Length: 527
Ligand code: G4P
Image 1 (cartoon, helix red, strand yellow):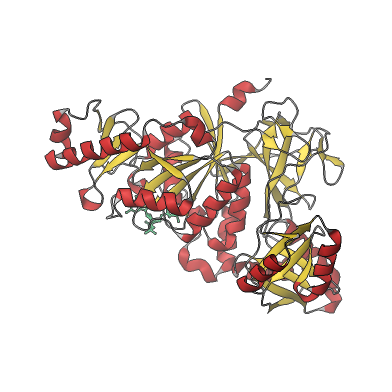
Image 2: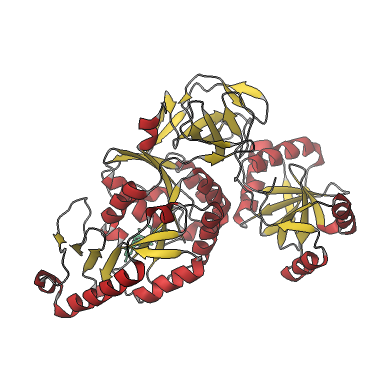
């Protein structure tokens, strides 16, 4: 393998969580360990604050800042780690889902007080679809949280994944004394620390050692012995292959804000997390170690300044070596492009790079040639699969307020939907344009951007739909009949695939039952 050395040192992952569980804080600690930042608080500018929910411009501005931190690359113990940022705000959830297609594993943060929350559930669904390896970090152990065994059970049940504790906490809240590392049999006593060191780690290979009692007190020492015996009996040793295939998630306990329990996780992460994995395409599986370059666009970031309409397309390198100024084949457009200023993302700065390897993310300046899911190769015709669109949750009709600007509106909406801001459906037998989004905020973003970037005024009319389902069938006639019969509830997506727009769960279930020859899909990843 030509680039084995580069591939074997790379780990590309994302931290995901329900907002407020501690994703930003944990990101920051990782960067501290990696030496990428020196001060706490440096990542905060990336965070969309809760109170800003009504002020989308503020959010977009912050998203603008976040281009630099969209991908954070740092080195830790000879490994090169690409940490892909995911927006925490629920209205941008689809951005997050797509980012998950570009990583090889994830760290899931769960708040020990709140347990499994709605966003956690949905994010895990996406991970399960792709068998993404997951490491769980149970955060905020310095607060009075749920009983740990109950919490593990809740996570297993709600997220449909088996867990494997790697560390075990001694109490929580004010009584939190530390974590016992079940893997290397050491005790880390709880201290609030802001730097990366190994102080306060005591090796206790034999739990009957009286040193344990001396360090945590008789009662807690006894409890830990009981807990560990139970855990050992239930879980045994972690099988790394089960983690890699997404069946078992190793679990760590800690407190991100106190930088506690984070190092244990990071050390395990570099030991077991996958290096860039092989990927499915429309033609064949592409091995990360192949000599020839290939990659795909998973995110497009628009420049909000109307004077600089350039966008940045984020390309995940999947195989071979990406080189600056070399021509690559844009499969969808059947055209060759070269990039003179590809960007790499080191925390908080952007640098032009000469080359990149599998697992890396490159920022490409784009003047409108890319849409999400586009593949670049050295000439072979295939596209990477598994980059789905999810069924939107809010639907509105796009109403043109200025007939003189129809062309601009069409162009604007096409480009914005290429960026993945929203999905566009056209009703059959009419020209009604239906915009589907995951959050209300995106409608404001669209309206604002159409006006300011394309001089097109629009408004939205709420539609009574609840879900969009992509339809397939082996019986074309039946599908045609269904679409004709359900004309006011059906249309096509931007790529011409038929879609059923359901008014309610009841309608949807009824149609599914009444039409056994038609398959209803909740993501577009079916072709
Ligand atoms: P997010 O990115 O997942 O949305 O969460 P973020 O890291 O911003 O953390 C949310 C809040 O939880 C922050 O408090 C943060 O300080 C706090 N937090 C993170 N880790 C821990 C922990 O281990 N223990 C405790 N007790 N709190 C933790 P905030 O008040 O919302 O923000 P800030 O003003 O402290 O920055």
